[in-house]
Image (cartoon, rainbow, N blue to C red; front, side, top):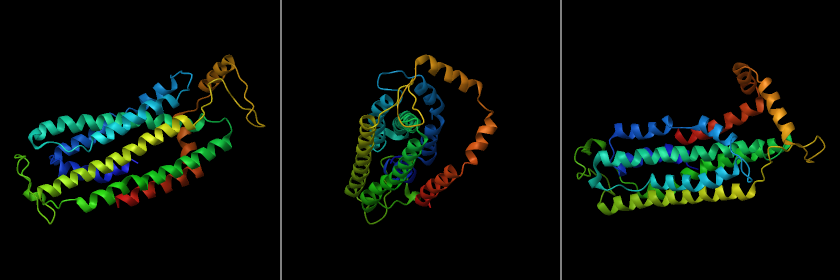
Length: 275
C-alpha cells in the first residue's frame, strides 16, 4: 500500500509541491534506506515474550505509527521554512516511516510460520499473504493516480528558483495559487486514505490472527498440540547445532521453484507500475 505510492509520487511531491532541491530529495529518500533496521527487528521480535504472542503486539503498536508517519510525509510545507526547514522536517519524517513500517512488516511476515505447525497451513497463509500484497501494490498508487493526477500542476523545472522560495515558478494550465492548494489537498487526501487502510490492516491482523505459543507443536494427524518449555529449549539447541552454512541455505532458497515463481510474479507486478 505504501511503498509503491512513495516510489511513484513522493519524489514528485517533494519536487513540485514542497519545492525541495533535487539533491535534498535524494538525501531524504536515501536516509530511509540507511536506517532500515530489519536485522534489528528480527532480533527484537525473536526476544519478545508477551501473553499475546511474539508478533501480534508489534502489529498493534506499529500499524498506527506507520499510518501516522505516512500521513506526515505528505503535509504541505510552508514557503517560509526554506530548504533547511523542509529538510529538517521531511528527512526525520521519512526515517520515522521507514522504521515504523519495518517494525510492522517483519512481525507480519514472521506470523506465517507462527500461525500453525502444519506445512499446508503455512503454504496456504503464504499464498493469501502474497495475493493481498499484490493487491496492495495495485491499490496504493491508485488513490494517488485518481485523486492527485487531475489536480497536478505543470512545472517547468528551469523556471524554479531554488534559492528564492517565494518564487513559485509555475507554468501550465493549472498553475494558479488555487491550483497549487488543490494539488496539496489531493496529496493529503490520498495519503489519508492509504493511512486509514494501513491502520485497518493492522487492526485486522491483530484481532484476526491466532498465534501459536512458543511451547506448542502439532502432531502429524492434525492440530492436537503438546509440548513443554523443556522440550522447546531442547529443540532450539538442536536447531542451533544443525544450522548449515550460509551458502547452503542460499542455495536452498534460490532453487526452490514455488518461491522463485512467486518472486518473479511479485517483481514483475511491481516493476510494471514503475515502467
